[in-house]
Length: 271
Image 1: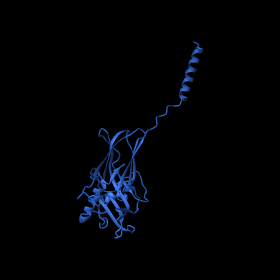
Image 2: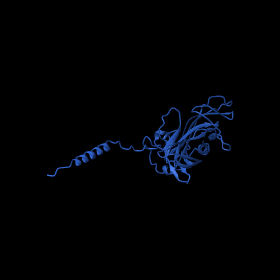
Image 3: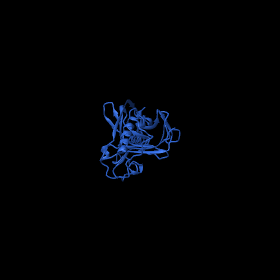
Image 4: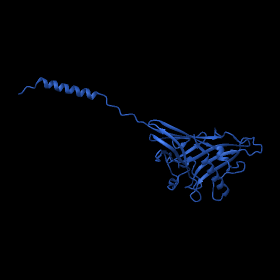
């Protein structure tokens, strides 16, 4: 029998040692996940100054009002790249400027989305429910994080298929001296009604910006209540208007809803 050379045992030992040391070597860690984000923050203002729910606002020295609730649908928010390509961020959210309510990822006053890093030239979104979504609504049995869930207060309970694009609850001072706490309630529900109106409108805010990889871009969108109610040439007389659900028989209310809807879109500015 042939004798195995001591060199073979030395080789085997060396191979074993190399394999052992290599197997004990820590594996390379996977690179950390980099998240690039875009945040939309919505603020309620009056004449350029922030206002809170139930805060009395005096406009032009002779009109006093306060807002108790403001909600509206944010439809198809998206970024626009410099080449014109759109980057969708969501289908639908609810901007809610309420007091003492729990916010979540689809119901609140700020929303954060994961987006690609890159160069952008604009932000686009709609006010109301986009027709493409509205056309698919057959009932209102939706999940807890669906903006069409009736528990968010945007479904008009008189029907199973009509939603409020904008919900506004406020109080006005109707005294002649305009020196009392606003106490006359006005509730305006701007509906998106299949039979009569489609008030959904798309807005675009042009502003070039770059989001670097791993960074977060935050944009503030201010809603000026004074411009919702008192823009030049289309002011609403808060001392005389009444509440409305914009039902077909309420011609005056429908006109008020259309007027407020037009003003609302123009009252939003991007910082």
